[in-house]
Length: 244
Length: 364
Image (tube, rainbow over all chains, first blue to last red; front, side, top):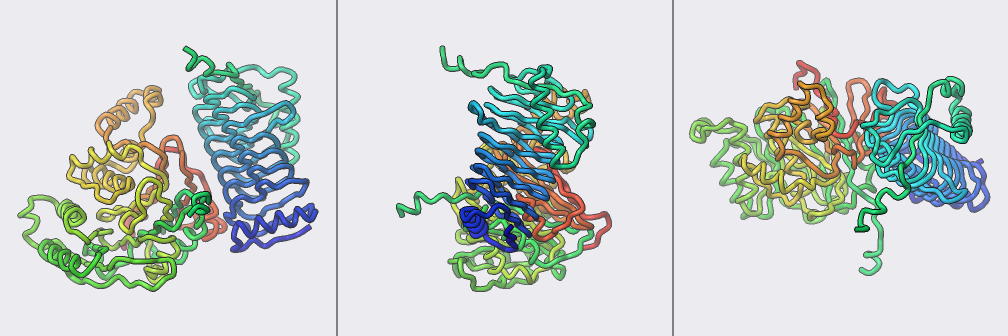
């Protein structure tokens, strides 16, 4: 294991260090005193694990392809941007556009997330991205979602809506599982509410178990509440838009 | 040149603000550290700070910070300011030589009062008189530009990275209970000294990340009330809109921000009747004040600080509190670097103002 004290380190220097270590075969890197350094873990490959203490900057794990990053505090915007494989675990809250255009791998956030989480996530065959949010989300959850799976648990949420407004606006692929209900007026026009079937339950319970393992939560307590499933009405909602 | 054209500069403006609710003044080091942490969000074409409580000796005088091209412009400006105000004191704004800050204008400040008799002649309120003169100077006196005009506050700005601008203006030597700051990445408008943020008028100051795509509508609306848009940048309409709505029309802050970033009609339609009527009235009366486009802004004024995001949250903003201090910034790291353990950290919702006010009865 290699420890790096990131105090006052420029993001380029820090990321070069991480890439060099990973290239040499280091399997575990611990970053201390991180404060705003962008692009940590970007385009990183392999099976290295990175523990981050402090606040990592924007676009954490963008284009990441395999590694696991555990953030022992809050995260900022753009986590997992176009991520391909691997896992990000955030113990606090996270910001906007989490999982933007994500193509594979998993993101777990214990707290709330901001706007446009899961925007234009996509999947192809076995390459399926997963996002599990423990808290609540703000507007445009799953906007233009094209594939993948998102789970929103709304644990410790107050009376505010679990997912804000415009949920799944423009959604045309993938699926969302929401613990609780969402008023129809907050749903995007392209989304329909469904009951979970056996396959949904299997997939959901696997993800919730993994969430509980990371954050030490009670699985039964979380699953005791009813979930709804959101799916697109059509995989080509605008197919006829310019057709005539 | 060729290589430069291919270079990608990942940036997009940074803002940060610190308020002490008890009016306790702190020097510039914290705000500099906060905005410097977000260095890579700006590109060196603008940086600036607004500081409140910095001129206790002259707190009853309007502090004009003036950017001047040359001695001839200075003469023109001084002739005008002496005609329309009583100048109590004037001086060069202290600056230091700093690498990365080039070709600054002459920078001077004038502490002024509105002379007796001026208001009767003009038949308007004192602050309207000051606004009128500031607008006149900035529109009609070539080579002179009043970059801030409030009492017991000042805007310090120019072309450069914010931390270099801070060194240039020696901001660690000033003490303020409210600091806001900005690192600029100009998109649609030129990077020039006057175009850096904060944009100010009287004690209003605005730092802004984003762009106001409704600029044309807002500009025409403000022109009806005598404001002149001269700074070649969209942000100035925000400062004037706050001046118009809050100072002149005396709207409570939450009503003013509801005019600037109102709920969508579909959400208004779903409100209970009294609210529905109120928001319909606000949108009808203040349609020209609606600000569209992506923005996160911090508005400073004598009584505190307002943070506001556009209605669909296209720019970042995070807020935190610790004791008497309130923080707002583009990135949480920009707060944590100066306050590692805040008591509360939260992400303000789109279109909902985050308001920090001085405690009642605080003497400045």
